[in-house]
Image (tube, rainbow, N blue to C red; front, side, top):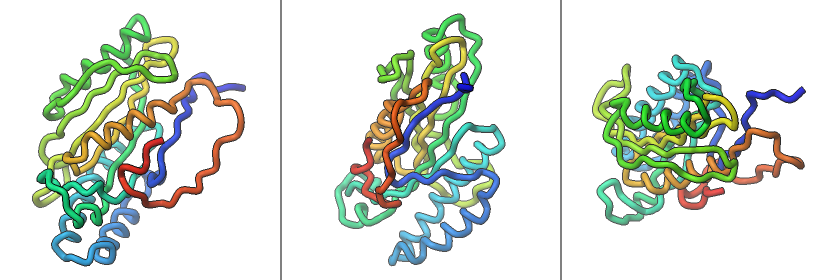
Amino acid sequence: MRDPDAVWFRLPPGYVDLDLDALEPLRDGLLADWATLCADPDRAARAARESRALFGVLEQLRDRGVLHTAIGLHAGDGTREGGAPGREARDEARVSVFSLSEVETGAPSSAAAAARCALDLATAGLGDVWESGLVDLPCGTPAALVTSLLPGRPDGVDGPVPRAFQARLAIARPRGSRVVVADLTTAHPAEAAAYTDILLAVGGTVRFTEPEGPAEPDTAPARSRLLDVLL
């Protein structure tokens, strides 16, 4: 029997599904790997700080309860955090966190649900809002995008960490007042536009009815360049 609450979507190459009940060994392994992945000790230390911040976000997601979570690892697009191009920026790995959750808005229609959810996201006080507005997606239901720069560091994370960028996509279900919310968070605000495009591409794959035909096999490498991962 078809599950009326099911939602289908596809993530681009470089994203790996996460078990939120097994975060500690994954975090410890990734932090240990940075020394091997980054030859420069300063870059390894910076990457470790960014990873700790993102794992703080994951711990918050675990406490909130989510439908799906994945972590992405990609090479940079050649832009330093200060905005200037550089080979070292291309070599550095970019870590991001994707999550999918659902909220009940109590709105009278799907269009009102998407608008209300977007308004709540934009006014929740979760940082500096950069962009907000309605977007069109292939699934045909009302949707809204909100991007922002998150404040401070997550609870439980010590030491200086960069402010994280987050793009959030609220997609109304075809009927009722529930909204599916897709989040993409990264510690690299300089590449906000690229991550926003990735989230919108994922949103373009969202369906509330089971897609026809078999799923395409995933033969992509586990790590790819940031700008090569659009669906």
